[in-house]
Image (cartoon, rainbow, N blue to C red; front, side):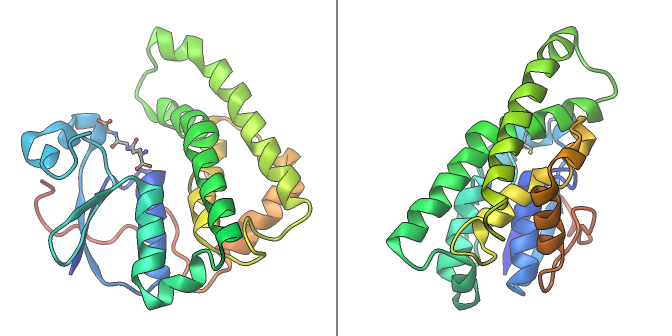
Length: 213
Ligand SMILES: N[C@@H](CCC(=O)N[C@@H](CS)C(=O)NCC(=O)O)C(=O)O
């Protein structure tokens, strides 16, 4: 059986929860609290030396990290996942392009702004850096809006892992202080993604299966 190590608040973890739910893959859920440093404990560092969730443990005992790499793995490793994955070299390129965009231009701004605003108190440095994160986050959202003005999904005009990767933090961007009302095509895409079969919400967290580490 798969095991997912995650923090319920994490959008990176949500990508994996959403994919597992939509692929109907059974798994055990192990909750960690990043704010309490639980991912930096020695037992967890044996699973991911970077000390970060999500980590997906495979039934044969391997520990997979990096949310978008896990999505890629699930799309390739499961017959049901193939419809979520790229079908041609061009689609492989497009899927990777959007997933790298998510990790470099989107997540570090939108997820980080959201995370900081969830903290009991922002540090002086975080307060100083927030406007730049917001500016760069808006640039990423504008790139998505431009694409979605001419397409229903990110790759191959069908729902897939690039949509899952980008949906995770886009749909909660308002929690980071972003105004999504200025992006009508993005708003329509968010609704389209939420209507996919077996969709689960970021707040639909499975019951935890005992100790996290
Ligand atoms: N690039 C990684 C980022 C993972 C990441 O930043 N995880 C955060 C939670 S969303 C974490 O575990 N932070 C705890 C820490 O750094 O101590 C991915 O996509 O999985």
